[in-house]
Length: 165
Image 1: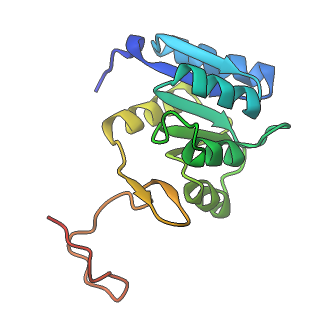
Image 2: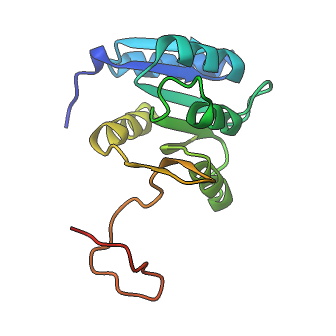
């Protein structure tokens, strides 16, 4: 489905200026109306609090504050104005352990560098078309880590209170 993204505000957080420009230009090319840029995690969090973007795209490894710590601030700080904002994390590492760590910190989507504008558009489309319910426990606040409900699953790992309506 084609979207008119001109009303969307996306905050890109990256400490590498060339990569920051690449992502921002790709978003503008895709039609995103308001692309905000922050160089590093601290500046990104301050801009997030001030601007309240619709979506955040952040690098994982940054010098001042890494992407996982930034996500922890977004999801758990008392001054966080929009704890449920979709967060897409970018990284050059696609190992399953990285994907799991990102998911366990409250990431909405995972984007492996280098990526194409088409892959970036696919992640944006996914967070728009498939908003995730949020889960809050003593140890976690973030998007539900289960991507789909297995309505017919009856295996030994099924929880008794999982009722699919």
